Length: 237
Length: 185
Image 1 (cartoon, helix red, strand yellow):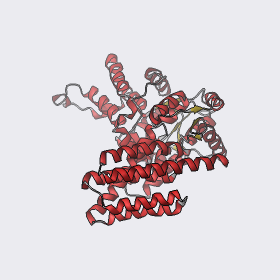
Image 2 (image 1 turned 90 degrees about the vertical axis):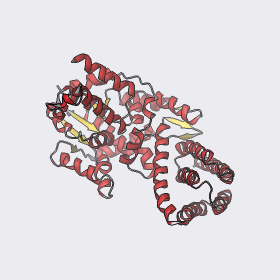
Image 3 (image 1 turned 45 degrees about the vertical axis):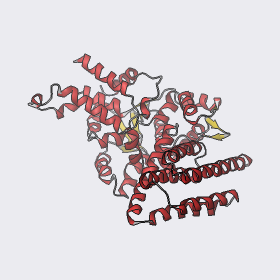
Image 4 (image 1 turned 30 degrees about the horizontal axis):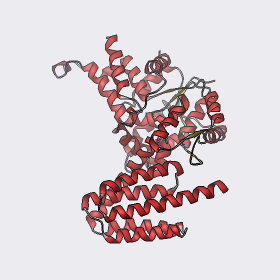
């Protein structure tokens, strides 16, 4: 069992798009373990953008973190088989009109499988479906029924299996990483003397700005959760 | 295998109906209804995740955008759609696909300005439909894969929508925060 956190593609994108990728290096220093991505996540984050013009610069901003081992690529031949097994279970949980709904992608499943393989209890995922599959799959069924307007049948055995597989796994999002970065004082680097001439409460504004930026970049966090974080942090001050 | 044949038949029949509906709407120059039809197609796309259904949703959305801008569509558009529908009725999926590609080329070729605009519209349509799939409960990675997009593109758009505000969850924010705090003591 290794002290490790495995990242899906989304959280790294959210941090990159908001110039907060550097916080990972600082967080890693406090973690006493490894930060991993998987080969499929590497393809989405770096390889594919490097083949195009759009997001090439963003990919090049992530690469130094990989080159300096802040984030490492974890590869093990046994994970591919485990990922396919997980995909087979996850993508046969919900049925509509006799058709299994393929809800999860290989890269997402590989990130989760890697965390399970390493015995890591934390995986960072910003998108909602995989997170719900780990935390509360019935949310997916209810949500689908509301959107598709059709009866969604569940595979009780596969949902039971998933519950067992994921029982010790916690999902966190980039929004929590940014909040804790703020609590650790990492975002204070944006606050300099003299700012109060321009804004009343720079510390509050930097937190609010960072949280909203992460949400607007696609992290699955609700507006009321952002308000809750701001309230929690205000009470602490 | 038997299951798949039945499904294909169901998809094909759905698509024939949807094409018929699209032709009727285009003849009435109703861009709003055409956009609504594209949203409906995405329900089928979420279920079947079949290339033909997905491309149809993108094409109909793009046509709705062009119609919104031009206020009418060249009669050749409905002609090609009729032919595509005929091929689907005759179970000739290859020729149906060729017709849909011909349709995209035809619109782009109408004038140079529209050609550039179409490129933009098609990409926007893909992002919009990918976001719709995600909204239906398909993961972001899977939605991006189905539409041939990157997660970078899709995340930026999803973040600007209200999708994430709509679902209440079991796990409390405080619980998640406590877990993260414990990781970085």
